[in-house]
Image (cartoon, rainbow, N blue to C red; front, top):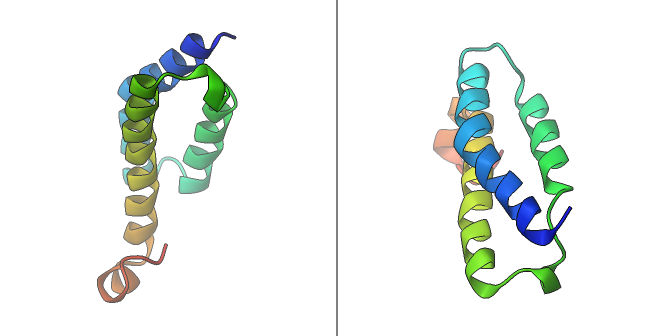
Length: 90
């Protein structure tokens, strides 16, 4: 898979799968660990750093930041008491 195809796969997954899977986790129909497993599959498609332009890298940082925020939110949901006292844990 070319570098741009891997970046496109991440973008497409962010727009289509992330919202759908987030909803499943919130509804209790899927565990957070399964969400992470699916993210990891998509991450294997990423090109090496040498194949990515500066603009592509900036976009990728934003998209992957959304993924990380999603996971953090789900873990905080699992232990709301801890999330209130120490939001960095999770």
